[in-house]
Image (cartoon, rainbow, N blue to C red; front, side, top):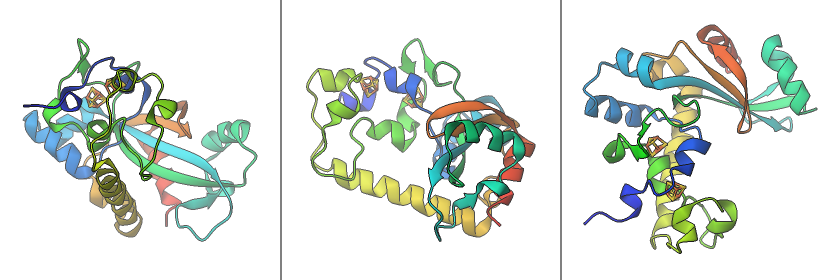
Amino acid sequence: MKSVKSICSKCTECCKRYNITLLPKEAKRIQKKLNLKEEEFVRKYCSLSLQFFPSLKSKNHFVFSKAKISEKIRKKLKEKSASNYFFLLPNISLKKSKKCVFLKNDLCEINSVKPEQCKLFPFISLKKETSFWKKYPFCLLLKQGFKPEKNFKEKSVKHYSNVKNYFESIKEKGFLLEWEEIPEKGFYFFKDENLGEITKKDFLEAIETFK
Ligand code: SF4
Ligand code: SF4
């Protein structure tokens, strides 16, 4: 029997609030399920995403001086943070306007192959003791008293380790070796705040800072 969590669309809040980033193998799984060619899947359902976080100067290879960031993006980032350095996560996400592109009639159209981030939510944490209801007070599962499975921490550790390996691989091999097709446009973010649209050209310029 399926658990409540595996079919959860109780309130659909998480599908409206968050950008769901994709790992290449998750994208392949969805694409296969929908029986689409990669190019078609990316065009219909995916969006580019550049996520910036303020940072201290560090040896971390995802951190860049703001001087290296294009003027268009730098101008908006300056309104949000006085930091001279930014941590950048470039990615491909599921398209979203007010809600995820796969949320139809309050149900997830790709429930059996949805990304890990969606499968784990709201029980994503690297700490054994976490007040999930404080972090996600809007979640109906939590309001109704559902508890995480015993192994939620192990599952979260595994997921974050896959994400970390993915970004390391991007840094080492380049974004375009991980993704054969990329969308034509998307958005850039300061933390989780959407700051505006970007084109493929903006995206490719930003990931040049990785070199
Ligand atoms: S993939 Fe499904 S579960 Fe995940 S945000 Fe989209 S609609 Fe919600
Ligand atoms: S916010 Fe919580 S209850 Fe609502 S759909 Fe997401 S996991 Fe389910």
